[in-house]
Image (spheres, rainbow, N blue to C red):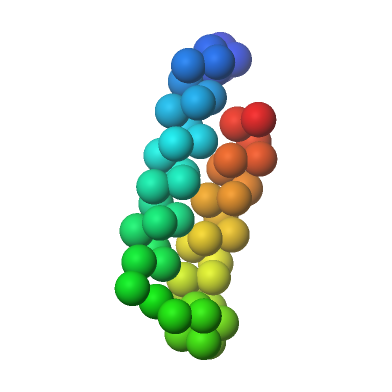
Length: 53
């Protein structure tokens, strides 16, 4: 598999950021902290961002 270009990496990061924003839109902190599915989804997107850097 070819190494992603800087432009592709930036797109992966921006896409992950948007997903995080979508996942937490309208949630308060208490709801986030009690919803393991949302926490897991957000954590995964941070992993995606970390891999893209």
